[in-house]
Image (tube, rainbow, N blue to C red):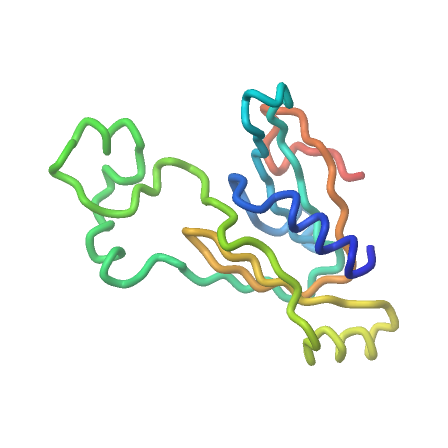
Length: 163
């Protein structure tokens, strides 16, 4: 996929829900699983998408939650959304138990990535670097290509058949 196609794919998931990310079962490619919705008035049904970043030579994840919020987010009740609701005003922290993160500010290509250029030169195929920013994690991926597919609901990240 060329850079214009990558940008279009990234725009399609802007402000949607990231529900899982990690290396694919075979450990070469990196997957982002997305729950994508539209305004209900449009009549467009929600769908689950898999963004597969192929030949991923680097995947780095760091927290996007600031330290002052982390310090209030250590209670295990924050791992369960229902327990957090039951606690009411007793808890004030990042609710991990919602089980998703918003693609905001979103995914962007890193222009002029020296690392992507070096991998392209050494391997002989195009590489790109993307920054994935959510309200929970920031990811950096160095990869060769991107394939987006619709995933039937209910399948886990490790039961999805490869394209």
